[in-house]
Image 1 (cartoon, rainbow, N blue to C red):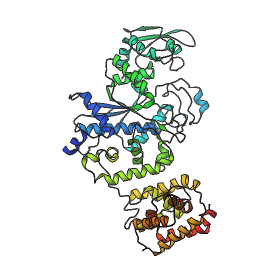
Image 2: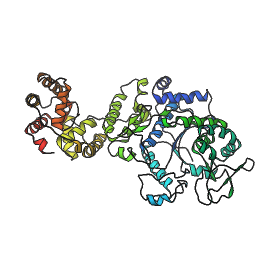
Image 3: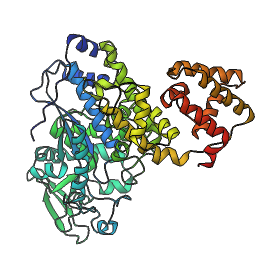
Image 4: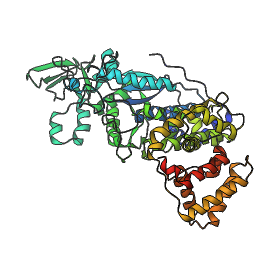
Length: 542
């Protein structure tokens, strides 16, 4: 497959110099590859690889590995002034046997008849035109990666095995079979040790990927022999041409060796597997790739997300409520820290992205390289103005009860004169996301409460102060009045006053900087909101 052409990135002496000492994690990782080269220029591109097991629907963790690896690839390009060619290979292990039926797919009864067969041979339970379960899941992943604009090549395990891409390395593995067994067997229990082989024959009779011990090996002929588990007949098969695949740890090492992979990251749960595969790779005469182990994503209960369980956000879930750049923002931040991956982190992540974008152009070169924007956009920050935060949009939708974009744009245009859906298309997109997010996640949880006597007095005072302010007062002036009311009415700590505003006026425990919100919503509208709260109509409207 022809490598896609990588887009150019800003490349000047200041940036290149800053990259040499930048502490952002993609540059720390990229320097490992530079050190690996030891000053030499390779005669072929540096290969970055990501792995994907299409036994379940692609989830955000899969996307994260591609996004993060791309960030390391781009950091390497800057470090080397783009003089050394690179490739990013997204590899799907679709020759792996179907071990269990995922919880989140249709036609489970149909799949039950194909347990153990390669995923590329299992029929597609979704009934699509892709031909197999593996191909359907591969297509889902590729569709998103293509839509996101990644420069990558896609590889299928079944295709590479059958086309003979791995044949030379498989024969090498057969030649050093005893060395590989000596590496792996000490890590296994006694039962597994008795049946283990790095080679898994594909049964010509049943089509199942067989977990059987080897009866004999012929290095010269390039064959192995095993007993059919059902017929007990001795079967001899080549290790080449797709007649076998490797056990996954051996397979990982074999792939590294065959393709000369220079970099591949993996989840923290695979640390022992990375070390074991590295030893096998060395036994095959090759150096294992550089890489690091990222922390796992957790669901809302703090459990590891799983493709088969479907307990994490899907790529489609995130993109229904936020732009794709925010997903990359989430992947960039603290990859070695376990993070909850649930709907409630989306608004915060969106606003973090736009805050970093607003700051980017004002930063010196060395600071730009530590900003997520450089890594998300390959060094080229988009010219996007966001005068209203996503959190503020959510509260505007909440307070106005407006699901009509034109109504919301009336508030926005008054707050930021000259802003329209045409001049700020990204903001217009964010309005759509805010309406959808509010309807699905905020509205169902809104609970208004009545104000106490102290709170009623403070809210009445606040309304009077709002009435006295100029109609075009900015958020800072309004916020000063909010603070003054809270202090004068004895709220201790002061945050209890702001919690009052959120709970009584907005029906939620948290909210925006209230002065900024009132400036966006309008002083008259906010004053009416206070009247409605004090009259009890907000509670009745629930």
